[in-house]
Structure formats: structure tokens, C-alpha cells
Image (cartoon, rainbow, N blue to C red; front, side, top):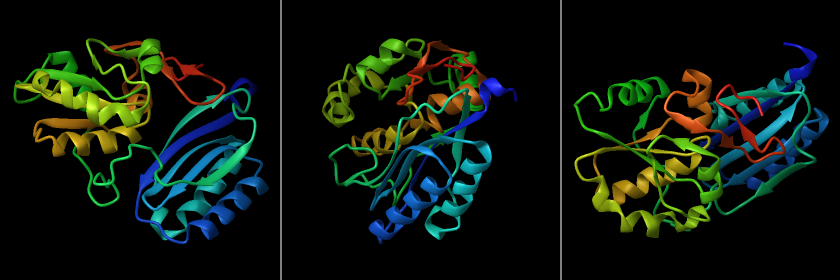
Length: 245
């Protein structure tokens, strides 16, 4: 790893029931400050969502400290590299939701919708159908400006400006799902945790969420069947399928 790519960027989330949010916030903030990390950590009763960057050893030390707290032991993360830290400051905040949907019956900390791995999805898209022969419908759960930067080929785009619009807009087009296997996707997987549960509430049975989102797909299989770049929410703005800005 050369000097050009010396900064480790991590993205992670975990839906898990949390209490004692303020003590956890103070501890995570203090640890990150001590290690010189920048980025954003969101805590809510439904879990944690984070984007952090810094020296690799410091990032891994912070993750070790985080995962030593038992609710976070199962946390996994996605990595990418940059030559500078793409965040100006450090924020650790308590929110009502770690990804806002305004739909209290959707509780991913209690149940998880079925997920498909990047490798399996690529195979399905290569062969034009899932393993039972059903055609694949890719459902983009992201906002319109993200879709404009890049998307899976032939994906269905809802034209939403914010994720809170997803439930009403997807309800309008659910007849397009008939006879197809629906795979919902987003940047890192977190929006689909809620979107997939909502599709279940709509009565849809043949649907999956892309595990780890577009970023995990890029990491594991590259840019196959994906057109353009993927918007990320830091100063890098968008990543290519090789995870470079």
C-alpha cells in the first residue's frame, strides 16, 4: 500500500437493540478523538451506523474497542482507501433512527429480511434469472441524485428525493413485481434492511436485499452489470467499481 492510499475508510451498520445511548456515545466519541479519527457515528435504540476514516491501525483499534461492547460484537464493515481523510470533523450523535424511514412497524433489530450475496447476484444477472428460473428485477432504493450517478443495468428507480418517500412510491408500482424475483439494493445495505421488510409487509414473497449493498458488490465482484459510479457521503463524492474516487 503506497503513500497515495494510506487512509482507511470504513462504513458499517448494525441493527441491534441498544440502551444507555448517552454513555455509549461519550465512550465512542472519546475513543475516536484519542485515535484521531474523523467521520460520523449515529446511535439509536435500533442500532449503529458509521462512516469513519483515519490511520489504519487507529481505525482497527477503534473497531476492537467498539466490538468489545457485546451488542456490537457481530459488527462487520466495508473498507476503502484514500490519500486524505475525506471528513472535516468527527460527529457522534444520538438519533431516533439510524436510517430514517418514519415507519415504526419496521424493526430490523428484531427480524432481518433475506439477503443475497454479491457473488450469487452476479451469477443470477449473468444467467438472466435466479436459480429457479425467475427473471430478476433490481429495485433501487436510493435517492434520485444517487441513481443518476450510477445504477445496476435496467434497475427500477422510484425517483424519490429522500428515503422516507420509499413506502408510498414502491406501493404504487408493486404490480410490476409479479412473476419476478425482486432484489433491492442501496449504497451499503442499510436502507434495504428496512425496504425489504416493507416489501414483506406489502405481501411480496420473492424478494431479497443485496447483502452489503453496492460497495460490498464492488469489493467482491467489481462492476459487472453496474453502470457508472456509486455516490458516497463524504468528500470523495462517488466511487468507481474499483473503489477509487
